[in-house]
Length: 269
Image (cartoon, rainbow, N blue to C red; front, side, top):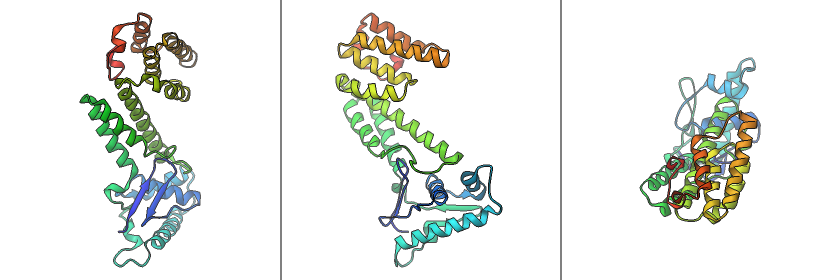
């Protein structure tokens, strides 16, 4: 079938035998991304039409999709070259109601990322923060930019990009937890300041920043982080921060001893 790799963790990458088969035109690129996001599974014509045109499909969308498929297969055939016994139809096959991109299990960066992230999270739960931090950092290193960057997205790809970005953020928070358990609070402060600026409503990141600042001897700044977050919550959401974050705030005020003990999440409060 040729050596097929897919990258969704950044700009779209689809290579066959090392050669890119990603088209430059927006809609064929979107179609390839949709198929790449569901490797080994058939994507029906109705789902394809919804992704490419949402509620405004052209007359006879099937013929247009077939034109795009022909273009994609042409790119794949060029990348395959004269290899015997394999064709573009093997890589991009026709099913009962749609099309399917066939990729080896190890050829998708999202699977690699998710496998490494799960292993890192499990390792942290077992108490090995050093190994967990390395595994989680390796998982995060697979990201090359925003998920599906540069791809025009319909509803399915928007949902997939959001899912991947949420998984990235969760993995990043877990890696920071591992580093806090390793006593790397001082080194984390600048990273967390940047993250809380980009994610002003994510409580867990603010909690990690408060903890890193407190452990670095900067408790007044930790309290200021809480004050700004509370102002943002009240102004934009009409809500107070969660009970757990308020308990962390009280613990910083009281210089509570448990703040210096290893903890895996806000659930410690």
